[in-house]
Image 1 (cartoon, rainbow, N blue to C red):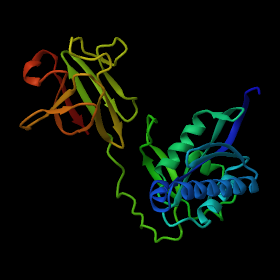
Image 2 (image 1 turned 45 degrees about the vertical axis):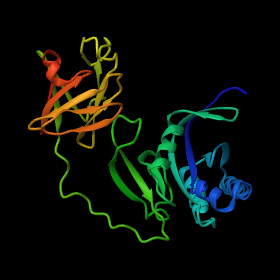
Image 3 (image 1 turned 60 degrees about the vertical axis):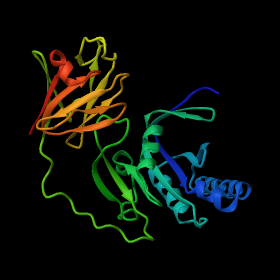
Image 4 (image 1 turned 135 degrees about the vertical axis):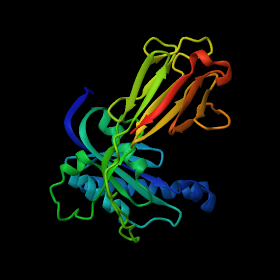
Length: 291
């Protein structure tokens, strides 16, 4: 089958939660039957709104629709159907270009729809801003709630998303912040070199590799040792190394060792890659927040 390219497609990823507890509660055979029946009902609801079931992924389903309205109608129908007490659903919707090859669907739109489903909680449906802009029946979807600047795994910048909450539960009142977050940046100094990290830049990779934004030539430093990223005005250091990363904050007593962990950088201090700061004076990275 040749690869089909669709310039604009509504992608829905629906997922089940609670199946592990279901297996413990009713046993393997009955639980497997219930999950299969649930997925079959989802398939029927997808087809009823003109959609296509592309793939079943464990307890989840990947579907495409001719419009975002159709995808959202199907997701609501899935949400409102009866479930076993331990089971629930959540779903994500995005709209964009996709490529289809037999029973596979490729493209950023697919990954983004799955990320939206990851964000959604029990019986919630989350749409990207791109999907929300394509909705035609605005009156029907007036309960959609904008949530601004949400960090999304794999995305270089936070995204604005729209939440269709579980209408059977009392909603949490939403109070917007009194003022927008201040623009902040993080300054990294290594010897005579200065690197500035802020929300407009991709993650700053630090290590021994020539392609790293900040190169540290030391035998204990990994090729791509660590990275620093700005998310919603906060700066996070992620260690990817063999020997770990040490962080000392100004006024702090001892250095914190990170080993494949994440750490929020605050105020000012020093970063030492692969070796204790006291033994690494020539290769320390000094950091400071500038707001």
